[in-house]
Amino acid sequence: MKRRSIEAETPMARAEDGLCRALLSLQGVAEMRAFLRDLCTPAELEALSDRWCVVPYILKGMPYREIHERTAVSITTIGRVARFLSHGNGGYLAALSRDAAPKSTRAKAAAADAATRPPASAAKSPRARVAARGVRR
Image (cartoon, rainbow, N blue to C red; front, side):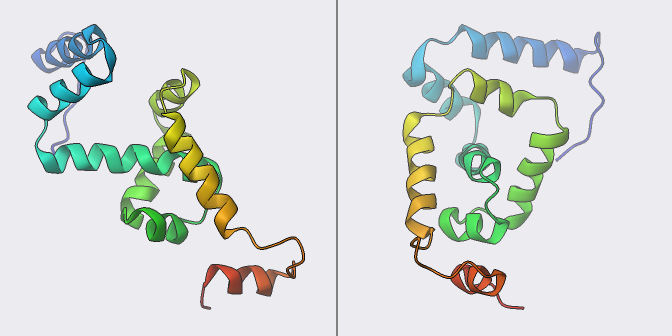
């Protein structure tokens, strides 16, 4: 990916502002989906979707390897999303705070978390937790 400095009055900044206005003008998921499918290649759209789908898991504190096993998103991408969640521009959290994450995404993350949680009777030792996750030392 190209690294560019986007300053207030550059042509690139104006183009980014125009894109932001275009995104804001769309009404509903169907219009947004159509726009994104026109704007992005399938690989670009998949990359954006991958980044968004790992956010709930990261916020739950799930280990990266477990997120990777559930989503098939690369550990590098998961790490990048985590870095921007904590040191980025606040975009992920702004979208989440406005309930932009579909309830199905949040429900899937919660269900997946509950499905892998050991029963209450299971041992709580660190070794047992590591073994339950399938992590090898």
